[in-house]
Length: 223
Image (cartoon, rainbow, N blue to C red; front, side, top):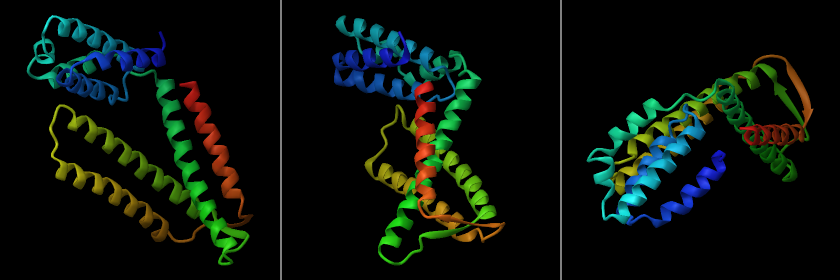
């Protein structure tokens, strides 16, 4: 079975778990899947094997703690350590896909904003673009984006097998929303106009954004 078929089988079978067993298993599932540098197929096969084992034990009246032990996170770490690494070419495609989607969203939002301003009579159909500024902002923004994406993944893994209080969760969620937004705004306003100037029609950003989105989609389908 491929990864999609494995995930579908897992999603159907875990409905049979009791609430207590489901909580433990879903923490195990999240921890393993968030190990982004591991083989996806091997990860899903192990998750299905663990689920089948837990379902059999559940029929015998056993709990997840009896199967996975009192410290399931330790077991999850051991499993992750034994999983084969993701194929380098697939890892590179994932990075390229993320970059394509990232720049696509930026170009579409920028182009959409400029279009709205033009329709309101507060913008120009011809845009002046400083090439150096665009390159600098793109590189720094991409570094910030990937940095916060990795930080989010690490936080999500850290929160597995923990009972995070609602107030703490709301605070952390707020920080993850405010800090990157502030960082991106700083990049936009603090990097000065540098490099040669190009004059392009307003719709160019929308075309570039659409093209990058299609590229990201193709890379995603190829994974």
